[in-house]
Image 1 (cartoon, rainbow, N blue to C red):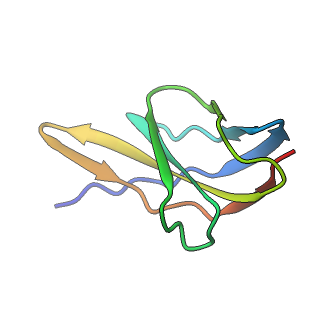
Image 2: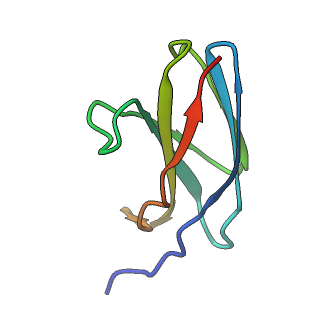
Amino acid sequence: EPIKMSPSWIFQITAAKNTAKVKWKKVSGAGGYQIQCSTSKNFKDAKTKTVKNISALKISKLSGKRTYYVRIRSWKKVGKNVYYSGWSKAKKVKIK
């Protein structure tokens, strides 16, 4: 029986020079989060970052003057299995 995980959602993305700072809403019971960042809407060749117990992340080494799409999902480890929520809606950010 898979565990139902509530998806997290991004409430703020701030663009700076070659970086983006992402803040999201924490999900109770989540072991951590996966954040994906891509220049394509369908997340082809996306960079994925897995984090634990934080609610903000700075994504660096992005190309300036480009638009990136960012999405997030929560995960939880039970025994040897890892369960994921669905992905959040993607948010757009234009890098400076």
